[in-house]
Every structure is written in C-alpha cells, then in structure tokens.
Image 1 (cartoon, rainbow, N blue to C red):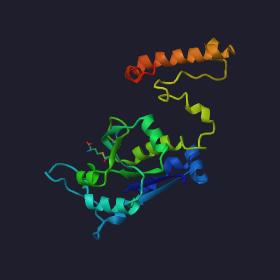
Image 2: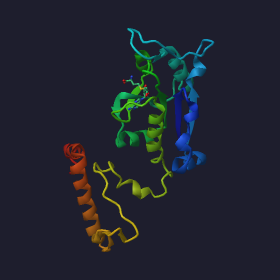
Image 3: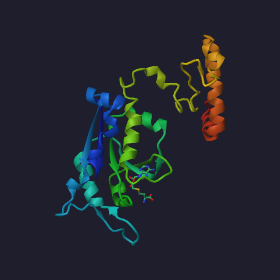
Image 4: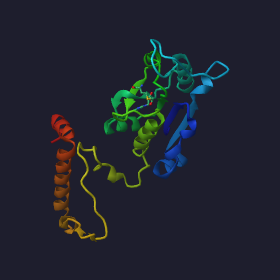
Length: 234
Ligand code: SAH
C-alpha cells in the first residue's frame, strides 16, 4: 500500500497544486502516493454551510467549529485508520527532517488545515490531533504548510528520488548544513571552482566537504552543532 495523504481544507482547489508537478507530480501519477483533498464545508449542517463562529470570550476573528471538524475527520479517518492526524499550526512542534522521515516511513497522514484564528481546542483533544508548525511566522491558512510538509515527505518515498544516494548528504540528514556546490563553467566572473574539487582525490574532496559543512553550520546554525554534539554525533 502506497503512502496516502488526506487533507481537510476549505480550499481543496489548492491541492495538489505545486505537488502536481515535477518529482512529486510524477510520483503522484505513478501511484507512489495518493492525495485526497476533503472539503470541510461539506460537513456543515446549515443552509449557509457555516464552518466557523465567533470566539468564546470575545475578540477579533473567527474560530473553526469543533463539531463540523470532527465530522470531517470521522468521515475521512474512521476508527481503524492508523495514519497520524496532524493539525498545521504555528503553535505546533516545529517540523524537522527527522519528523519528515518518520512520516515517510508510515502509511500516510491526515492533515487538517486551519483558517481564520484557528480551530476550537476541543477537537484537537477529542480527535488526538498533533500540532505541527513549519516555522515561527503566521500564514493565512494551513494549506501552504500542508504542501510544504507533503513535499518534504513525498521526496523520501521509495522510488521517488531518481538519485537515492543524494539523500544522505543533504542538509540536516547528518545534523549539518550541506557543503557548497559548484559546476561548469570552471571560471565564472573571475571566480574559480575550489581546486580540491577538480583534483580527483576523493578522500581530500570528502574531507573538504565535511570541513565546509562544519564551518557553515558553525557560522549559520550553531544550534545544530550543539544538538549534534549532545546526540553524540560529533
Ligand atoms: N491565531 C493563530 C494563527 C492563525 S493562522 C495564532 O496566533 O496562533 C490560520 C491558520 O494558518 C492556522 O490555523 C494554521 O492552520 C495555519 N498556520 C499559520 N501559520 C502556520 C505555521 N507557521 N505553521 C503551520 N500552520 C500555520
């Protein structure tokens, strides 16, 4: 059974969107994964198909109703569905490559995309939703965040990446940012490719890349180096 993604949203037209093209799009066509957008509004009960209401306690904006969302979730992910249920949310645990790898190793995912001020807290608890953030900034809705998460997961699915090996040296896979890349021409606006890369000495090249990765990580993301040290990786 291939990886199955269900996305609960008020904007199903946003899917597959960017994921219908390139690597993810070809994998979707080939059946390496599947994507089912579900219109939350279809589970509304009134004539106007209302999904939100004013926040209890007052204040600006609207909140997505727990009862409507629960119906949408129960329909799309009935008991027995073992896929994790995620809620895209700036309050969630920041998404990491490790989490992406865990998801890619599983049967799929059910993703709820918030809109307005967010969703009623009770549906998060009652349906065991795991909140996931894609960074410390606020989007207008969970859809772009869901696309980001799925893009990261899909490229790890078996057979999706043409060059499997290129996955291992990627930024974050070994706790470091990746080394710089170069290709033809040998001289660009007076700038040369570092000589070691054209030396043909693979031991030296590997050493240089490792050093560059460590230097870049120390400069830009000292937090990653500290985490790698704590995990006993360096
Ligand atoms: N009032 C909320 C923000 C709501 S933004 C707050 O201050 O926390 C509307 C929706 O966009 C959210 O429900 C969530 O689904 C999505 N969203 C916004 N920023 C996000 C982020 N950084 N990561 C994941 N989802 C996000």
